[in-house]
Length: 112
Length: 115
Image (tube, rainbow over all chains, first blue to last red; front, side):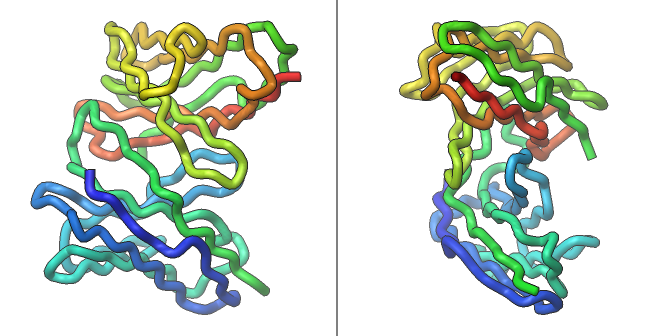
């Protein structure tokens, strides 16, 4: 599984756009990039997944450059409730028995 | 999206007793379930992977006789912490994936406190 590197923590004010970048230099051809969000004392929640270029849903956008060695999760106009840990994971989309392996994640703190 | 539930959400037990945690996939058949453990301010650590009807595969350093995993049906997996000790106190999270569910969906977690 490709190893990922992301900032340990980030701070942001309410209403700002937050961009969290993840490096995955060893990403394989069949790997997808997936982001999860975790609030304290809760299980991780799927946010978004992409393979290349840009993906957008009602929660976030995911930007992936052509070389796919990094990706950026963009959260528009964050609120206090977006304070959480965000994990970037890389792996095959339908990988059966292969579990998701979590790195340290990025702890986002949104300040009023 | 797919829903995974866990029961109980919180449990306190005395040292030396056993605790069972249930994990259910509510709207899909979970061919594979995963169990993770998470200590405060730390990331999720994979404990084991289980497929329906077969024995679980444990990660290195996880005692299979202490953490008993049963995946008897396509919608239910259980984790039993046997002879629990205070150092087993942690947040236990299950996750499931099915034949047509590409993403891994996670349960809400179970907070275990051993006194």
